[in-house]
Amino acid sequence: MKKLLSILAVLALAVLAACGANNSNSEGSSGDGEDSNKLVVGASNIPHAEILEEAKPVLKEKGVELEIKTFQDYILPNKTLANGELDANYFQTIPYMDLQMEENENYDFVNAGGIHIEPIGVYSQDYGSLEELPEGAQIIMSNSVSDHGRMLSLLEAQGLITLEEGVKAADATVENIADNPKNIEFKTDVEASLLPQIYQQGEGDAVMINTNYAIDAGLNPQEDAIALEDSDSPYVNVITVNKGDEDNEAVKTLVEVLRSEDIQNFIKEEYNGAVVPVNE
Image (cartoon, rainbow, N blue to C red):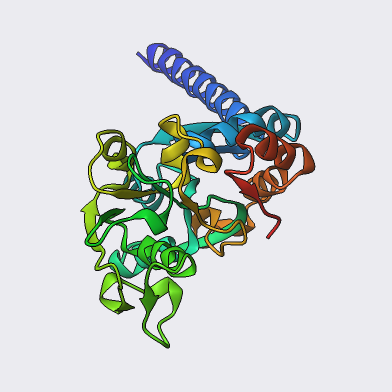
């Protein structure tokens, strides 16, 4: 009986040793730096995901593995970032990020770096300029309140409306229009991703479309828009991360690569001025 117990004890120790060896090997394979240098980044299809694809091999050379998850809307990329499914996202401007944090108490995001500007454009099937819009024309905008200020500022710069004095452009809404000589009607309850479809269906007299959705729908902002936001717009598209992750070395490398001369040249050549790279 004692001999049997001794044999069982030896076998148990052997099994434990084997398990310990296997666990050690497993830890070694996951601790070789590959996982810690992997980034999962959420992005809109165009241009964000395309720009990330261009940066992917450069990042790999620098030891960062990039996985890109694409989204068709502006809501899910922040939800998935907040719950930890993403390491970063690349689709939004700072005013939009700030508004999302105001509306969602569990969001604690920071800007890890600005990459490019996408000027918003006005598109029309029937008119060649804003001046041609008739009395009582309808302009369709997205339901993204954070974009309303920049859209209205564009219309003001073009002389179509005047905003109230003292109202910051970023905070302006249709309620802040002081002068509307053509009595333009604003429709502001449309999901941003649906705006190209609405334009193509000929709804409204003019439609204001974010450049990423315009390009994705086959539109050329430089040629098809009847009015286009200046390229010096303050609405920079940024790499967004959860607070504290802005100092992550892989995130820093991502921003560095996206701001590199090669990627900036790709943006300029690929989008013909419809997407403008920045360095801040």
